[in-house]
Length: 365
Image (tube, rainbow, N blue to C red; front, side, top):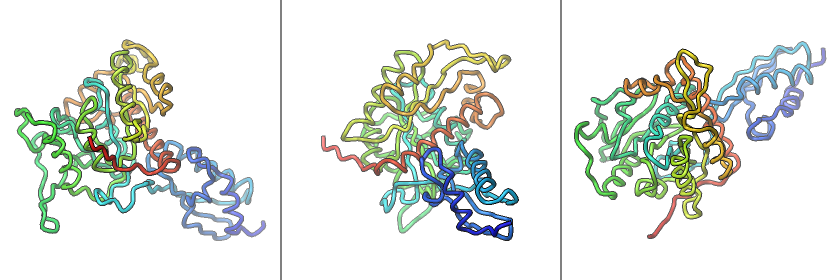
């Protein structure tokens, strides 16, 4: 058997392409800690996210390349690890947060907060460091959805300034006005006051290192949305809709807002919630009670990714009410949210590799 060298191994691995980034693993710098001992080869493949849906495919392609191009007797030990990509650097605000993702909807009642909560938990389950800001100041739902309605965030002093310590639940760091105001009290504030609360959540909270910070925005397009894009460079936005026409009309406005030249936040994709009804006793049956294909058609119209569909089942509603997100269970909805999180992480990685940095928006009017 010919001697196995690093050059031979790297040459073989240079034929293995990252399916998303369309470049080979070697030129992308994704091969690390390469060690060779006789016919034993070990190395790490550093993926762009722990939620990579193509992890096993990439590993299998590496094994095949080594077997076919180096030696049929090779004994490979491949470690699949990750380092979430970012295009944020030297940011004065949230410097240790790699990606800021807005979760928006054109109208209320489409399940935007349910999607945001389950995305956050699913990404955390896959090994990412995740935070979630409940920016729906007038209708906060995160405390209920995470079963921490009676919790209060801590306070620490940093450089002479009091900072909020977010609550942690199910592996996700959380902040919401619902933790700071009594649950039975209405938040009766003008727009600037609500915007000020969001600014505090961004600047006066100890977030630490995060791979993804999700912002659950209020429905529509409002002061809160402008405050977000004027405060921090947003990696991208996810727009949630349901299939029926009235929801899609409003969702179009949400997509159009982020695509405006003066805002210019990449739309990472469309999520179609309540896409079909699946009875618990017939998990393979799909009934499109609100229409079919609306979310996919919207994505095609605006030339943005279609991230996936979430069914309407009783367990999702129960999970939200009980404070135990559906993705923590073992059923069809958990699988849907898990796949959705993988699609989102995939689009974040593609966006970071191929698009320019998002700039903080400057709107004078």
